[in-house]
Image 1 (cartoon, rainbow, N blue to C red):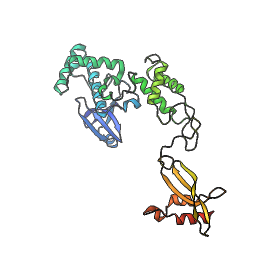
Image 2 (image 1 turned 90 degrees about the vertical axis):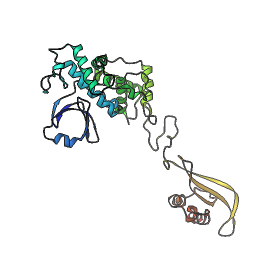
Image 3 (image 1 turned 60 degrees about the vertical axis):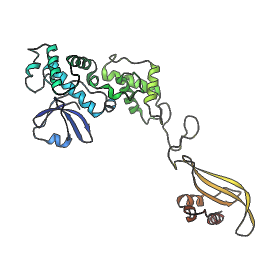
Image 4 (image 1 turned 120 degrees about the horizontal axis):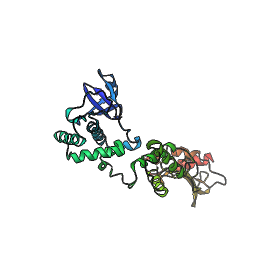
Length: 334
């Protein structure tokens, strides 16, 4: 991503690679979408240059809309041409600079004014010399991320005013430690600090205080599996000592029995006390199956209950409930 290529006798820059397709942007703002396999096999295809500045962290760059990515990469080519005379940067094989951007003939201010006139002719809005200068300076400080239109990112306000590079490092640290049972928030913070130093150099990015980093990790972490707690399992206990939360139907089924305050006539004609055993879904609270049977001194066999859960009797599926057959089957199984 960000590489300069030659395709169909034109120079392009790779804006994104999504679903096996390469999204390209030309120096004049034109865009194209080509299958990557077709692109590399096309006659005359070649890579003529790499990105002058490394792109932002993938976790952060993916949050930028595709149109904003293409706009930022288009700005990158224009800034390179203003500064060096060549859209692909110094050392590229794109030939001599255009006359109005030749550093040997015009000053930097004159080249900025020429670029502003060119962008205005292409239909770019508010492309004044001041805008070109501002974009050039912010690119020198922040690289490609500085060219991204931040208005597309205002919806992601949960991180407050935290530096985007720190946010990207926290996201990467959470990704690396995902699924590890004994990950703590402090380990996430220390790993994020190391990622920032390795990516941008020691001391190049100011880091917020630990309290701010703790809040940032809490905001960006998966709420169903926060750092500092053991990974959730179907049967493992949570930090509070109780069972983990039930999130899906049939994930946990409770079986309970209740003695009914009534008597019924058994098949032998004698009066029997009746107990109701039911299976309850822990997620929805629905009764999955219920069987009425005579009171037993020992544990109730659950074979009939399981059979009712798998395939309820015809009367329970449509029409009034049928208690005679479950009760008879329960007596036989008991």
